[in-house]
Length: 369
Image (cartoon, rainbow, N blue to C red; front, side):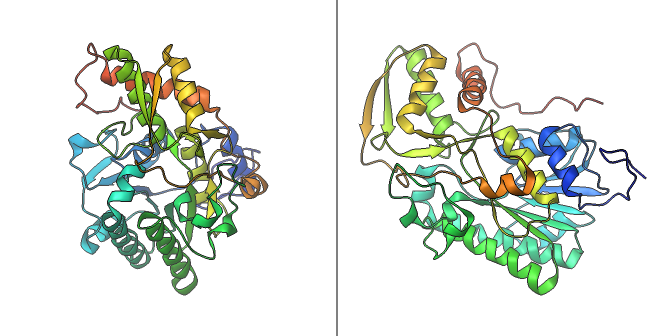
């Protein structure tokens, strides 16, 4: 039998003792003590790609699934079983979860505020992915099912003031989430709950708060604020036209979570005992104007700001109350925004600079052995 972090022997299992889960929060190299294969749905996306990479570094067997063709994945690992499947179809979900122990569902048709405000029906159709996946997971007898929800599930009337009170998990009800995307997230959270209650499928849910980092979307309309601001600053620097357009008045507030914190927290929640939706986000609140300040400092430029008050800007204020995750795991996402933005900016700059290599190859480096 394997040894846990205290040197005690126990059987391999997909459910970890709380002490081990807490240790994972402080030591990302600690292997999850579980056997069998893991499927990551949405593996061709930003968060999914990072999750696959981390699981492979732990020596796990991973099946990676995404609707996009493999050459469009942000990160592609030769060590994983990589499948292009449309998970809105039930038969493809059955194939995805066959012979796996753990299911991570990060698959959705989504993007930044510009995308979700203009594509509400497409966002709602992602409900087919989670519905068919939980049905297939139940039938396949998987051990655990993780659903990636969003802070967009929170009631809009609690996010009207930039000087926002941080959102607690119970603030999702009475329900009035982000139209389209937020309703799909809230509905799918309930689907997971009822499959757990009615059918015994062990489900876990995290509400992500604005994840950012390298190897993600930074142009094309689906990018989120940190990547969009980095791109705009880089465009201004490279072109010599020192102006930037900001959506809204720049006074709206958000928190932004570094991708490594997201991946670590996702696995902690998956393997923990808490059954209800749990916040996963940084509590470092900033205005969009301050976000621009930080990126300008990293880039070494100062730009004239033009405010587009007609552009989509989302709620006026949103932050994550991390009281519960600290209580449960003794941990919370804590990477400083300045530190994470520095790495994000440099990665995006390398993709955009004239001397950079062609952007299309995304084959990730082999996992260290």
